[in-house]
Length: 639
View (cartoon, rainbow, N blue to C red):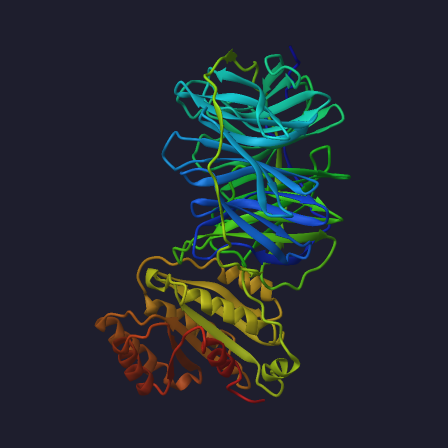
């Protein structure tokens, strides 16, 4: 068969970072009223094509290289939820494959389509009755080859199709049955060999998976060339192939592996093998202080390759890392802050390169607002700087380890016949829904008079402490998110001498930021973005810390101020304690202001009584007035 290479047990190296990426744009291409996600993208003819799902329908969008939306069309090819899994561009046509599926069912209602995107009409649309999840489509001879997963006889199998380009009819069809559980998620064709990779279950109906790779002849799918595993052989390990590419006589694959046997604690794995499975090198990469790092796509370029992935806990962010062909990290960065709480990507193609730029497509979900998935497109360029405050870009290093050893053995496959039937699809092309062509976090282009209106000339320097209610009741889109957005925007105009502190209080109080210069906006954003809403409000503990910070950085010439942000949901006992505490602090020359994120007259009257008693102010805030209120607080004292 093939040789196995062994490594010493987990040697650790720290991969260094070098050049960085500048963000050219971050465009929202989703419908905010419906779950809307990106599943694949491709580049052709100086255009970007993104496909995905929107509610029960699927969509295709065509965009300019600058992110401007040209058109977006919606389709229904199945009575189930419609997903497009892969597509290719040829002349004036888009050829794509996909399936209908409802979560929790074993139904995969596949479809194959050629779409005339110039005249916006379907040339042909076909399906079979095999219960298949098609994953990849490739041009081959005068037609196409599709690879996918077949759900038959209660187990998954690997399926191959050859389609005619003129009408989509199937010329050849072969399935392989796996003695394990699941099959192939990615494929590539080179020199009349089709390479198919995925995950393979070691035992039926278990979650013990190995990443795997198999080779078949394109001329005859019944001829298997070789197959082998790609990951560590520990008993508790699980590995899932994200994607792979071929370079000369080498395969480089990206996996996300669970080598600890703990759910949702994954690390990135990269493996380089010869075409016969002989291992060149293999490494595992972990991100310090994050519990999980998964890969979703891999993209070769001239001097290396990119890996696109997601982090989990303490935050879900996008990772874009560049590696050399030897597996050593060149640079890695996290992208967050401008995104919603949850970055989501499943199987698909999410990264592409064109004219020196990298394009990323994915979707986010605002968990705190119980919102919908929302697809977006981002363009990045290596070596450029970015002044886009819409997202926070952080350079990171990855810890790098060598695998202990590789698993031995080949896959157990058996070719089998399945009853086959093909038919035309009754489809529907829907008119466009509400189109969103905007930044995910809207950036206003400031005119000169607006910049002057936000000037801090002749204003005293700020020593401002934000006392932030992080209880569950603040977990609404019209509360904490609008505070963060307005604060971040105003920070752009403040001075290095202006100091911002932040304390969160819920079940307990905690200092988040201690007198950070407003010039370090990214650091402040990173600190505040880690706020999480949970538990009840211990406002007294928060105030104690707040006054300690305000006094610690007190300056007689400065604007010494504590701004408390809350929804006012305080018990009568807490209100009495708050009144007593503030009365004791009246003579310390620290101004106290309440921002109330609630229209309730009861809460306002309760807090108004306290504010009047201690000569403070209370403002009921909303998205329309919060920026003006904050600006007045920052400029309340002249020099």
